[in-house]
Amino acid sequence: MWGDPAMSLCAQTRADFPILNQEVRPGVALVYLDNAATTQKPVAVLDALDRYYRWNNANIHRGVHALAERATADYESARKKVARFIGAGSARQVVFVRNTTEAINLIAQSWGRANIGPGDEILLTELEHHSNIVPWQLLAREKGAAVRYLPVDTECRLDMSGLDSLLTERTRLVAFSGMSNVTGAFGPMGLIVERAHAAGAVVVLDGAQLVPHAPVNVAEMDVDFLAFSGHKMLGPTGIGVLYGKRRLLESMPPFQSGGDMIRRVTWEGAEWNDVPCKFEAGTPNIAGAIGLAAAVDYLEAIGMERIAAADRQMAAHLLEALGQNPGVKILGPIQSARGAVAAFTVDGVHPHDLAELLNREGIAIRAGHHCAMPLHHKLGLAASARASLYLYNKPVEIDLLVRSIRQAQKLFGVG
Image (cartoon, rainbow, N blue to C red; front, top):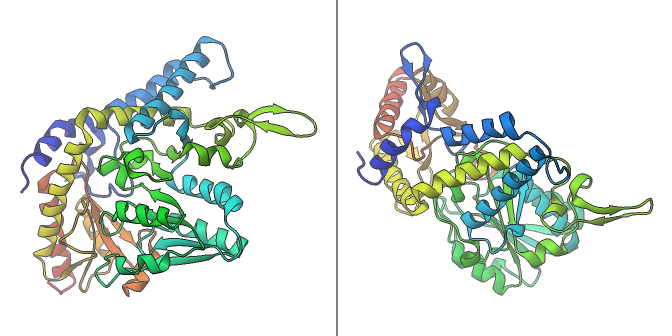
């Protein structure tokens, strides 16, 4: 059982999420433990989306009528709120994209194509999500560069002893996740950023899991790029953020063309708009940005330090409860800084079978490789189950998870 701050946070916020107050089948209440995939949305976010579409629906930056002016003001206000939320020095360092995946692809296709050449090296870690692996593999293949990996040990700990040897004079970029979507472990961000910069490399931080769970200040962290998604932090789907240092964004060519990213067009060519508009071709997800701003307001009203403290408490309870079952093997180190995410296997029960059995009890978890197939392959696993919590989860939901796992073991004759 957890107490303050997690319990008080759950009590404060639970009623703000109407989707949680439902039965997935008659008599079977929803227990939502798939927050690493996507979080639920509070009424404040739903209201912001409704308000835009009901009263302010118009395109931005081009119209002078009342609706267009209101929509533009709300969209650019959202950019300012996001910039403040992550500690960016200017709202012009915030580019709205669809999600973390698109943000990383933007960096690879724009900065990467202009700065990575034959024989250059890109350093990743073996904990990465596919979205922070495949774009760099494609770029390396196109440019004749090499992708190298900072390894993990059998307990999914990063082997930092090899970092300096992997950073060479040919390392142009280091990309890594701030918090693993498999193990929930926080990466040694300060050390990696410092060593990467000392080697002359640009740093990309995948903040998809980190930003919703802990305070982030890009100025203090000194990362060159940060990518994250709105839907993992109570915001809508289809909206994400790319933060970049101003000098890098200014130097990068456009990722896509057309619409508001153009300042001037002639029959012979075109002149690009200023950042961030240079990277926001076409009509953007206006409602998504406004909904994300509402999510930022909601999180800031609670306080990210408080959310981080609650997250640590939930993580400890989740790991302890799962660890009491000898047939459950948790991926990643137990005694380390972790968010409330746990991927695990159950002896004798396939993760997909477990997820289906839990679903019958109303419990929503994730089963598969969690877009981290190379990591699972290294661990000798085809898949794992994953439970992930957020600020509205209750301790009884962990108890229900553990009890249902035991029932699944009995069904399969292994418990």
